[in-house]
Amino acid sequence: MLAEHAEFGVNINSVLGSGINHPQDALTVANRAVELGFTSTLGIIHDGTGQLRPLSELEQSIYTKIKNLGKRSYARFDKFQKNIVQAQPNDWRCRAGARYLYICENGLVHYCSQQRGFPAIPLKDYSRQYMRREFNTRKSCAPFCTVSCVQQVAMLDNWRSPQTLNPQAAGNSTLVRLQTQSQEKTEVFAK
Image (cartoon, rainbow, N blue to C red; front, side, top):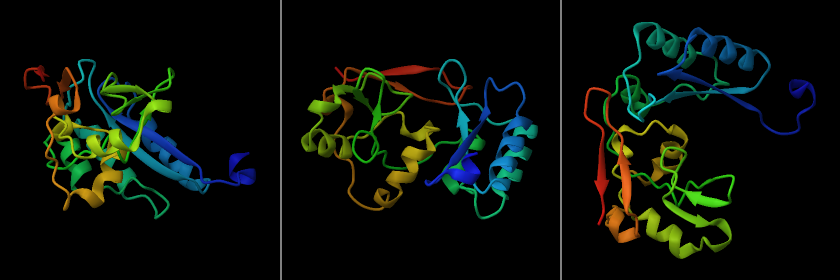
C-alpha cells in the first residue's frame, strides 16, 4: 500500500552483524524494497557488549550484494562502511548532538542510540549553545561507531572544523569506548 499511496519517501533499513540469526533476510528485505521503488539502507550492529565484530564470510557476501543493488539503494557506502564490515576504526568527526540528534522516548537528546545518557538534556531545553558545544566535542566512541546515519550527516565536516573539546569539557561523566570484539571493552572517565 505504501508503494501505491505514500506521498513521501520510504526507506527500508536492514541489519547485519552480531546477533542476527538469518543474515540472508537482509538481502530479501533490500531486494523487495527496491522492487517496490523504495530506498534501502543497511546497518551493521554491535554485539551484546557494544563491541564491533567483523562480518562473517556469508554476511560480507550479503553486504556486497546489497551494496550492488540498483541506484535506488543507499547501501552503496564509502570507506566508513567498508571499515565497519571489517571491524576497522574510522577517522572522522562525529557531530552527534549537533547535526544529528537522537531523542529518546522521554524527550531527552542523546548523541545516538549507542550513547544514551549523553548529554541527556530535554529537547525543550536543547539550545544552539548545546549544539555548538557538541559540534566541537570529540567523541571517544567514534572510531568504531556503526551508526552510519550519524557519519553521513557529518561527512561534510570531516575536512573542516576540527573538534577541540574533550567530552569532559562538554560535561559528560563517562562515554563507552566502542572497540572491536578482540579488544577489551573500556570506559573513558571524563572526570
